[in-house]
Image (cartoon, rainbow, N blue to C red; front, side, top):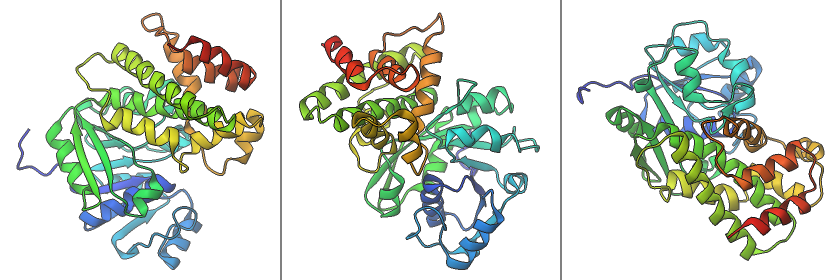
Length: 337
């Protein structure tokens, strides 16, 4: 790849939630303009009127004169060479299916940290197999970065994964700032699968918290979770990687412990005795781990995988098989070593 060629010149954000909003704020520090897809014209008008996202991270102000808003996803995508996909996974297919333009030549940046429901595919696989985007045009964003802390400009670290590491560096430069450090990786699949699994493990950590099972058991759970993550990721995508890096272990730790973690909070409600149905109703935003649990469980049923994953199995049993949380957690605890 020619290092003198700028492959990331016009960036557009697809999605309007908290993570999309935080990424848009980062991008505007280094990009003259960005495109931004919102589903609702009313939300766009509110954003332009008040200078902030009317629904998420409302304390974060924007220079809206530098944003090309549209509720037409094809209009936004047409005007960009790089599309940052930052929407909850349950909304991914309904939104991306609206794309009718050819996106094969565009760079696709997955910031979903989820999996395509019903298809059991990571986001980059979907864009490659369904949309024909080359693997070299695929990037992923990973690492321990809650949208709320990014918006508050607290020191954070993001890992940008791409098979083309020069392209990863170019996109990383669009995000980097004094408070946002970037790390480059070529482990696209590993980062994506780890991002899905850490949400599953965060639900389990939330259950421990809700049950008041204590810090000692929480530490045991998380240490077993990173071992489980390594076994699965190394099986499905064999390559040299250090699972202790921030894109894997770091993201797991922040999602398992942080008060900003929706998955932890969802699991905590289950640990306190809420039913799965009520806990889902109580959540104001999507807990990706709920959907990721079923997808990862189904993926691991493939004959070429079937990795031993007791934590994933436990969370699946609670969420989808109606198993009592305390009973499931006791059986899990007995399996730890």
